[in-house]
Image 1: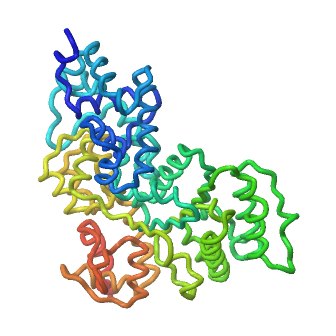
Image 2 (image 1 turned 180 degrees about the vertical axis):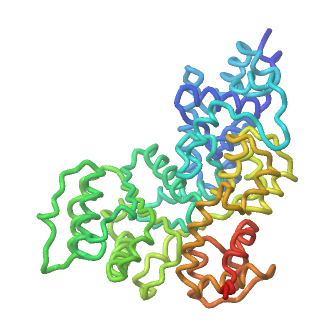
Image 3 (image 1 turned 180 degrees about the horizontal axis):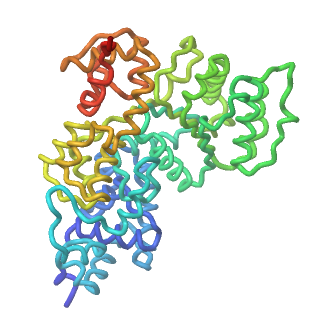
Length: 472
């Protein structure tokens, strides 16, 4: 038998490669790497692949180099763009039992099982491991992370830009922290220094005092870089907190680094609890961004800000970091992405089932993950899930009650939201009300008007927000 006797197409080769890489590295190939794989398999040049992926040539070449490293590890022989196809065909020849049916080796055993029912399926060991992450960030390498390919590619490309300011905006539980983790992982692959600070962890006493907050900020970055803290040498009351913080980065931290620093700040809007601190801190970040236009030292810094809401503090146009740089808004999942997610939970769903679930929860990543988790882990049917979803006995009860508490504490907001619930059309509301409801993730914006986020919220909140007639 020679290589030509083994029938292997690009998708089968990609599935085999992904499985081999995961066994050796614990990581699956990304969507971008899969696109590069398909293009290279077809003989495309990097320039052609870059156009199709909407990325720069340099970035595609760097990503391709990483792909060949992964494949070399998986195949246990050195491969390149020119040689990987021949190597995979040789592997297929030696393992023809895994490739004749054109399914990835990891799923050969599954093929002998009975087909999944229309609504549920037994979880594989991999899914059972990952499934516990449904309420938090999706771990690197998890099968349950669904890429938004153009967004990931744009973010990965952005951090290669000196002095960039990348802003990731979305309501809570939309995947900001999961995306941040992947941006930092990609930066690590470039041998960049990386630091991620979750601003939810700032003590209120530090947050309320600008000087203490900026010293905390500098100390945390220094600690993450495993450098000795030198605050006493750079903090000067005469110059003030912001100048001292700038000097600390400019004269100490950044010059110490031989590679760029990707500094990711998660939950940036938590600083808004202290408006005075927020005003000065955001102005400082904007100043650093401007410095990078003319300073090689500041070009080492690549800032990534993740936040849930628009920032409602009186920053003028030239002080705000929220009107410059690259803004990424995370959209809801599309039906195609929901179907892909269902498949990763080993659910053999058709378009009708995807539509039924999306009619209830929309394309909200967290709500979708929770639904699929319940169906797989607790062996529910889709029909059962949809029936209990808007009830106190359903899987969303904690999520819904938390929103209910917020609304009950703000009667004007509850009244406005009830108006949205009671109509199937877009509604015009006051700007501040829109801001608050959008911050909670309860509505969608359409130009200057809003509409309800999903049917789940209508069914749950409709009766609970209605004024109750007192019993005499």
